[in-house]
Figure 1 (cartoon, rainbow, N blue to C red):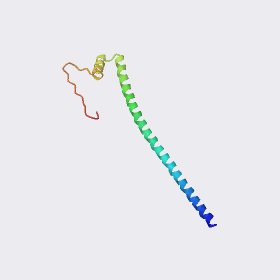
Figure 2: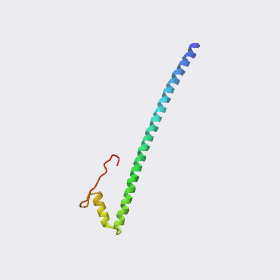
Figure 3: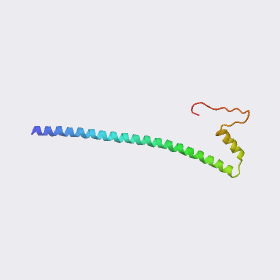
Figure 4: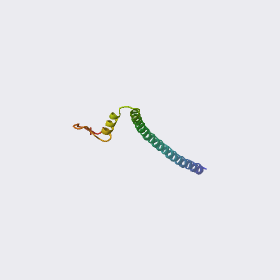
Length: 103
């Protein structure tokens, strides 16, 4: 009789140990999954913020173009485009560029 109870205790200990290992693996898997999802959410939020900034810039440019189309000062717009996009300068004008990192 003693042998059966000891064998049963050993089997129970083995089962408990295996169950514990399984639970630890499951908890580890879920923890890693949650961390990965949070990192993905954070990167998506950054992407959304960047796209929102681009959207706002485009809205401002559209408003400016609409003002020109509605009869605004076309010369100012042409000068701005020539300076910003084409890099043109007026004769005798010196242009300085800020090349410090982060700007």
